[in-house]
Image (cartoon, rainbow, N blue to C red; front, top):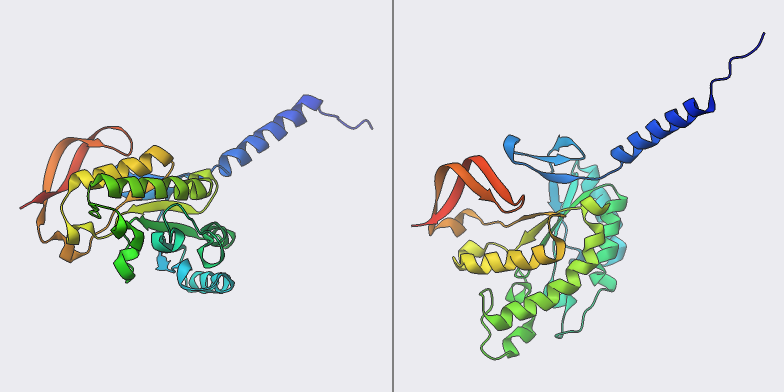
Length: 254
């Protein structure tokens, strides 16, 4: 009895379809689904449960064990500050080795299949002296930190240009574990300068664009000058760069 031999093109077609599906499956993607008030990770709604672990507070030999313990406890994400003062102890002199080897830390988070939220600052508080800002800033004439002061913004720009180039290949949408970046930290406790936050956002966006989700955060005490006002109608979504219809809550100065 003769065996049926399907044409070669059938195998080629099957392989092409399978390969195409694998390509789609392996394309990482993380974003905010504004319409449904949720995060979407690789095409599915997703919620993170994160634990704080600051890489610069311990030696790299402890990173694997600590991240593993967090994962064993049921967490699926790690959040960490980035300490500018440790990474740039002198202006223009950068340290990315030993405890400050942030790329190694990020890769360890990725190796253990955890998501990563980086709280970049530049001011981070984190119970650090000067909130993690480098002390050499104070030697610069007419310096005013956490403002649109040109000297401060120039120093921040120089730091971010170095840092963001280090972490860009490790963003989630680029195949790494970093899903979000926090800009500043609890700024509402310190001031209400919208222009400062806007300029800070522009520095991040100029380097990374829409490749990652940006956010900022405040504790309840940081809202003492503000109240939430509900607006209905069209509003500008800067992350997507377009108009949206719906309800948005804005912080409004009392």
